[in-house]
Image (cartoon, rainbow, N blue to C red; front, side, top):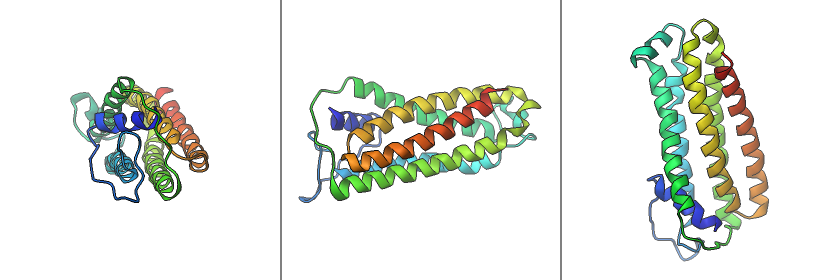
Length: 199
């Protein structure tokens, strides 16, 4: 069921495209080409990357604007929530997906998925690093921390779910590297949650 789950995740997320696979490209039991998996990971990477700029603008000066929905804080919170909403829809679809045992991607296709995942992890860690760096002034404006911490907890849950589906969809040698990447990302998310949730 691992690849039908992966297909359902991206279909529900609204990012699943349906290119015709080349004869040499592997597909899952339900026809999802490896290139589509890579493209869909890249969409999630783009969403994370788009939040880095607004996150860099977070400051003690614009933090009070959160209470009226202005400034970069709502942009960051809404952007993170968008990732959560998209992924939650995907998880719901995954739970309702028909069964079917797909064969894991191997060789170049598995490597491409692993590389796309590693890029997603790095970009998401960069975003989280910016958020962690901006958390220092939360003791002066404590109402900012809880909404950020809450959405980060939600991000943690859905990122783990999608990551495990990706890891289950590739050959073991690539999966073991991806597990290491995920462990690093999970550690960074936990630090960010602690910074914003500890206020």
